[in-house]
Amino acid sequence: RRKWMRVVGVLKELEQACQTPLSRLRQVVDAMAVEMHAGLASEGGSKLKMLLTYVDKLPNGSEKGIYYALDLGGTNFRILRVQLEGRRSSTIRHDVERMPVPQHLMTGTSKDLFDFIVASLRQFVEKEEAKDSPASTRELGFTFSFPVKQTSLNSGLLMKWTKGFSINDMVGKDVCECLQQALSRNGLDMHVAALVNDTVGTLALGHYNDEDTVAAVIIGTGTNACYFERADAIIKAQGLPTTSGGMVVNMEWGNFWSSHLPRTSYDIELDAQSPNPNDQGFEKMISGMYLGEIVRRVILRMSLESDIFGPVSPSLCEAFILRTPLMAAMHEDDSPDLNVVARALNDVLGIRDVPLKARKIVVNVCDVVSRRAARLAAAGIVGILKKIGRDGTGGIAGGRLKGGGSSSSSRSRRTVVTIEGGLYVEYRMFREYLHEAVAEILGEEFSPHVVLKVTEDGSGIGAALIAASYSSSE
Ligand code: ADP
Image 1 (cartoon, rainbow, N blue to C red):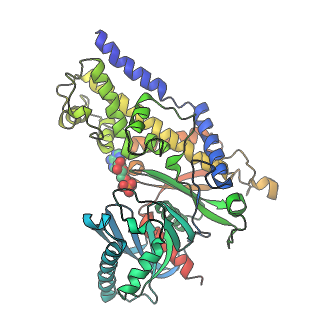
Image 2: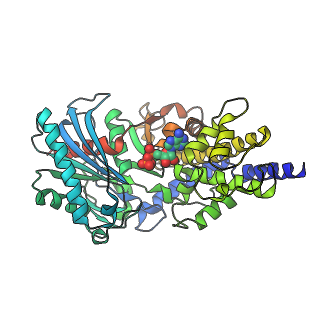
Image 3: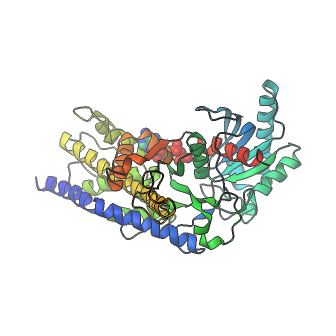
């Protein structure tokens, strides 16, 4: 009985440490807006890198023709061919091919990697053009989801590799040039029109679908966000030539940090034992890569403190064994005796015959961890809206200053944020908590003006759209 109290104690302590009351969310909103400002003020001014993308206009539906995209961001790469009609349509005609990057090419030379990619690209182009009319000029959007310091729309230097890639001769080089050279070397007539981060692709597709879209957020294995910023607010790049007076800024928000974030001992240990301690702090509390792992750490602690989970299972001690989709399945288990939870504990964590009341505790743990994540992501989103004066508090960008408080003022203007990623799309409870928190922070009066929309495959189609929007106007 005392042992049971210990388990309940661990849960209570977790609940306490993960609390995200409205007052705290507001502090996170403010901290996000302040850090965004600092990151825009000077290079290295904040943990938020606030990277320039050189995308100064977003697709609006007028794009016409056939465009290609190449999406390289992990162990798979994808090639797309997109057909645009010159008017907005709810579905964009496109063909896709997805291929794994052979293991040995991830750590070889840039020449080998790009020759391989271009060979696949050529096959794809030939196949597509055999069944369809060829593109007049082949323009390509290149989604490259590694840290890049962009120097123009279609050039950028690779800062470092992540996600298992390690091609040393490429670090510090222009990744577009590597691709363009491989295209020429292999005689494939194609022009790399744009280098695009995946969040920027998502924003492009979101804006193509709905012109009120101002920001894009990805919440999948990792998390990131970008938004459209006024050029004069990008203080670190004075005199930036833009046609529209603004530019998309890639926040790299996974690295956001603030003392207002509700941090637990589990977060601290997870971070300390990670390959990148003190890095990606926001991401470690929010994204799909980590939520299941936080839950595992809590259950392990419960198991160490009591015997309701039996003797400590060796599997339970294994980092990252509990994946977030399984955590979600336990969380959303609506069977009366929590069969899904029982099976997950048994099959994955090696914990047998868990009594119902302990299964309920596990569901509670999943709830606390996912709710905190969703509410913090929501605060991040409102932080962006605050920065651009679209959170209803009548910020400096408010129409009132310009227009005199008419119905077109920023207070009542419709604002769309587009969201993509497996965690948000597949995990219903997470999504609901996020929506609920955004509404809570914005308040009853203003929240109807903010719309959160799902985008599908922005990282691929969005890159082609950006290529299109920059090619067709020239
Ligand atoms: P990426 O790896 O590029 O972020 P996705 O956007 O598809 O790809 O996100 C995949 C991630 O989403 C997975 O790693 C997982 O963490 C999370 N995820 C996928 N399905 C679910 C699910 N059913 N419940 C909770 N999280 C999920």
